[in-house]
Length: 319
Picture (spheres, helix red, strand yellow):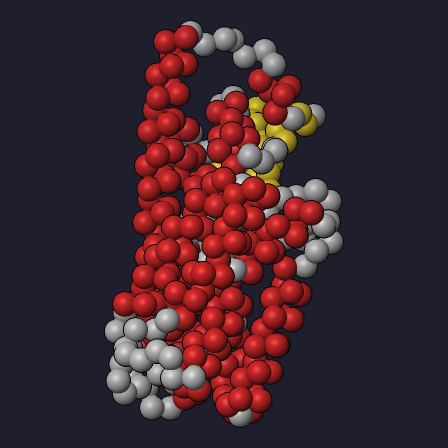
């Protein structure tokens, strides 16, 4: 037989107020520690991304996709064609920040407050890094193709690290989250593809087809590295086998990941002993946290993971 979380916790004895209060304080401390750790990791990701842009992409006269790509095009028009700005500071980061101000209000009102905070911190740190990381006077890599590949690896890894920490670079991420909540079949990838097609089309007209092709190569490598680092995109089926009551494992999955899970009784094929089985679908990133927690809850628990499963129906992806 299989049961849900409510059936498992229905007959659980009530805990004392003192025990509950102490548990809540420990939980709050742990959540604050986790939040600071994620913010630090997200800022580090933005630093790596900005280094990839300023050290490899900008010196090669290549362009990013999304809102930053639009900002870079505007910067080029202002600096090279209108001669309004000069110096070593890249104003694309500042323009990108200006674009993101109204989008952050959308994140605050229509997405979630936590998403707004993470996005605001990432956008501010990205702006600072893009504006003040020194841009080499001569390209570090003379070959444009090599620069586009190395820049894609570095920048894509940085974005993936930031996303893995729950951060967001703003721009199309906010627009995607907003429309995903409002429209069931909305595709974030489709709108990103359309925006990037316009950006690289403009690059082809203004700077030549060869530049546009290098930009597309950079974008493809960057997206590949982002997916490699951002393990929230990988759906994983998890089976946990334990000899103990699975209530603590279910608690962790339901309360910390905001996921549902199913449990049931089973018997070992060799020992024929009674055991419990817990089944859930998590992201690969969440699985890493679950494995660490299992060592504290039940060091003898046995866990099986199956990556890349297809999921239909109501399943919420977490940033």
